[in-house]
Length: 307
Image 1 (tube, one colour):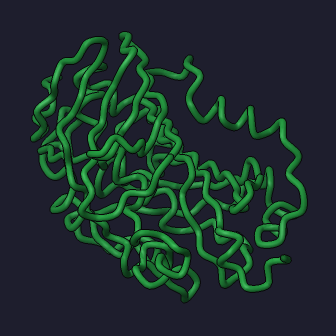
Image 2: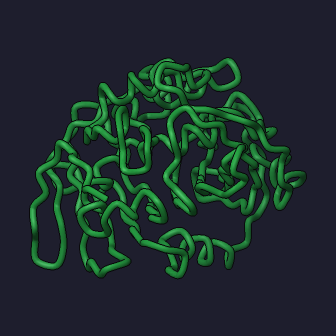
Image 3: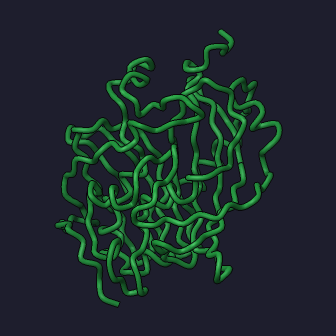
């Protein structure tokens, strides 16, 4: 296989790889969640005391794809896994740089930071299923805590943990809309993506265009699982893991996606739940990828939250 030609200048550093500084674009200003605006809306973000409407967390994953292809080869899109904890929200206009460190033939640490050094995310990039990931370790630590009383996701915790929902069939085409949660097309995303590649909209070593890693969460969660989170409330992404099992995932191909809530919890300001999505090639019947999303709701955004 030939290596992908990303429009990315990679710097060799002591013990790792560093990408260039980028200015990611916010594309969820028109996001609709059960008829209400999201944290990506300027007014809603201001109500929560945020500096601005944050960029969606998965956007930052694109800055790691060229670094991971450089470290692990094209197999990154076949059996790579990026697993990250989001530390600080990024507002459009701020700069972000990504880095791989402690690089071995099949594993590395990852981190991203703003131009002033503020950490954006931390995690792992691994090749193959034999590695423990950042979110494996975070879930294990959180499982040791008492969950306590839940008031916004109480019905999720009571009815859905461990339950696999019926699969939905989805396809990511170049110019098809991805629904109210993701109000943009793949073509629109590729026009704003931080790292460009001909593999995303043209030929690839696998025979056709492939879906960028950051868009796997869009594919996996554009439909379902429709959990009974109490509204009105405003959500956020806390952790995200994208794992290629028998990848890559192709543009224009049909995939069956099944969702399962695997864990719930809370912090001082957020109630949260973890959902695992299994993405199966609808024709071949093989699991192409899994997506593990830890998302939450701000307690302060729910009007009836107990004081």
